[in-house]
Length: 281
Ligand code: BG6
Image (cartoon, rainbow, N blue to C red; front, top):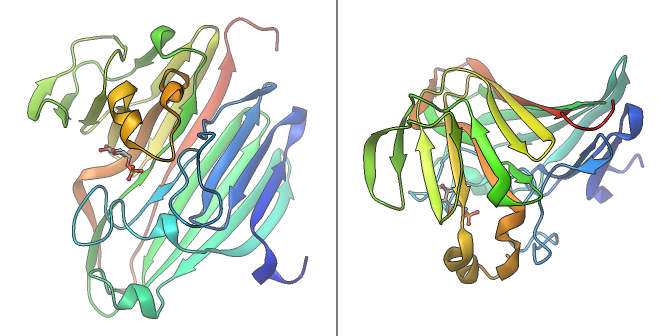
C-alpha cells in the first residue's frame, strides 16, 4: 500500500521458506522463521494492539534499559514507527523503520532530538537487527539500548547458553554484582535475571539439535532472563505455563551508556544465525 499510515506490520519473505514479521508499534519483530521453525517466542496472551509493549519477539529498548526516569525500558518499544523502505537484495529482504523525536518525546525526561533507523535484514539462515542512532540535537545525549530477544526453545531444561564463561555478571534476583560465570554452558532452572557485562564474543543458545548464534556490534552486554513460574504469574500478558518455552538472551549496552555528541551517529545491532546440528540442511 502507498499509504504508510495504514500499515500495521510488515511481513518479510526470504529464501528457503524464511520469513519475519515486524509491527510498526515499537518496531517489534514478532516472528522469525528459519529452517522450517519459528525461532522467536511470543506469549499467547501478548497484546498486539498497541495497548502495551509486546510480550515476546524482539522489543527494542531505547533510550533507557529497565526502570528509571522514563517508563520501564524507554519509549521506543511503545511508539509507532514509520516504514522507511523495504527491498529485496541478493540474499533476502531488508526493511528499514524510522523513529524521530516528536512533541511527546521532547516533553519526556529524555527530551533530545534524535533520528533512529532500524534495519531488519532477513536471509535464509539469519536475522539481523541494527539500530542506527543519530544525534540531531545541539547538545550531547547518552542512552542505554538493548534488543530484548525472546528466543523460542523446545524446553528450557535442555537449553544451554554458551559464550559467557569468565564474564562478570550482576544478578538482579540475588542482588549481587561481582560474580564471575564459571560455566561453559549456562543453564536456567529458576527465575533468572542477569546482566553479563563486556561479553567478548559470540553467544550461542543450544536446544536439542537447534542452535542460534548471536553476534553483536557496539552492544557490550548480554541480559539473560527467564521469569520462571513465580514471575510469570505476576505478568498479565504471559501465560503461566509458557516459561519453559522461552529464554531471553538480550544484546545491549546497559551496564554503561553510549554518548553521542551533536551530529554523531552509532549503529548497534545483532546478527542471529539459525543452525541445525541434527537435521539435514
Ligand atoms: C529484562 C529485565 O530485560 O526485561 C527484567 O532484565 C525485566 O528485569 C524483563 O523483568 C521484562 O521487562 P518488561 O518491562 O518487558 O516486563
